[in-house]
Amino acid sequence: MLARDAGMFVWLFVIGVLIVTYLRRQSMPTFDQYQAQYPNLVNDGHVTCRQCGGGSIYLRFAGLSFSGVVTNVHVCRACGTNLYRSISR
Ligand SMILES: [Zn+2]
Image: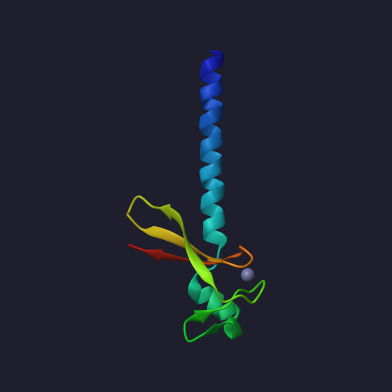
């Protein structure tokens, strides 16, 4: 009985983490939204960090959906700020 309750708690925790991860990902702007919000930071496809002004940005894998869509987060290499998300198939 106790073991089953513990298993239930673990499942609830895992589901909670997944939901929070999903919501955080959704709340991150897309490239278009980032460009609209910070038009002076995006020039000819070159993006600058909104926090530190750094121009070096790398892609971090952020998840794979059931339909095979990969979500990437674009992160500033200098300060580690998550700038925007993009998807690829
Ligand atoms: Zn930065």
